[in-house]
Structures are given as structure tokens and as C-alpha cells.
Length: 112
Length: 110
Image (cartoon, rainbow over all chains, first blue to last red; front, side, top):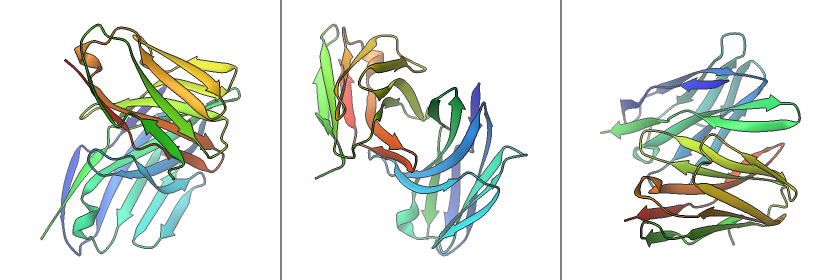
């Protein structure tokens, strides 16, 4: 089966660093995505991890530990435009079929 | 032009009506998906298709049907719309490098 947990809401201050955690239980795990979604808009790709470790991309970094079923998204130098929902999604492979399962998303509010 | 295009962007329909949401893509991807999103529930998979002859039910397929008319087109139908199908619907495509989402269709059933 598939199960993904992430906090519902977080608040952080402009210029600060915030870490959004995600734990997953995914059959046939084959990677983990992070997406950003502004209200009413489509999710946009932030990162993809399939191997353990940290992937850095500008102000955003993503970490994966396959043995712990754990990932986090790290946002540095927060800006007001970073206020959005952040979706953790795992890829599970069954036979030849791969499916993406989403968590409920973490709504991040960046304040002055 | 967008890689994944959904029509309509917004739709209000009455209970019991049949409605079709359309999705077309220029990515050349074989894999296409329909998701619905409700506040606080994330994206839930309705149906997915890995090629023109392959259709699979997702987590919440009841009350929905799909048609894969061509590699580039994947439509979602609500045979008899009901108010709890009011949601934001997303079409997506994928290959080994990731997923691309359409801009969404906001459907309201009154």
C-alpha cells in the first residue's frame, strides 16, 4: 500500500530557513518528488530524489533516506512568494506500472 | 502553448448532467493521468493510462469514466454529476524524468 505523511501547515519568517518533513510507506518505492503549488494552480516540479542523500538546487534542497522512509524539503532565504503548498509524492512500482501517490500537502505561510 | 492543456478551465454544471473534461498534451508522453484535488486531501488518482489501449482505475474511480482517444488526448467524463464531485481536476503526463501537470479544471456541481 501507499501512505504519505507531512505536516498540514507551517509558518516561517521572510529570510529564514524552513524544513518540511515527509514520511512514506510505499510498495515498490522508486523515488520521491516535491512539488510546489500555489492556490488554484497546477503543481510545479521542485525536486526528485531516488538515491539517499541531499540534492541542492538554488534556495531549495531535498533529502532522502530510503531506509527510514523519510524525506525533507529545505527552503533557504525565504521569500514572500514561497508562500504555497508543498506536496510530497512517492513513486511506487508494481510490475511494469508506476504510480505517483501524493501526501495532503504542507501549506507554508511566509510572514514579514 | 502549454505542454498539457485542459479544457474547460472552469465549469458549473447541474446535478445529474453528463460532463466531459478534456486534456491534450504535446509532450509525446505515453502515460497520462487524471487527479482530483479537494481542500486538505491532496491529489487523488482517478484513472491512468500507460498507452492508448491501456486504461486503469485509480483510488477514486467510482462515478467517473475515461477515454484515451489518441496518445495526446485523455478525457474524463462524469456520467451523472453530483455535488460531491465539486473539485479541482488535474490532468498530468509523465515519462522517466517526471510528471507535467495541466493548469486544472475547476468544476462546480450545483
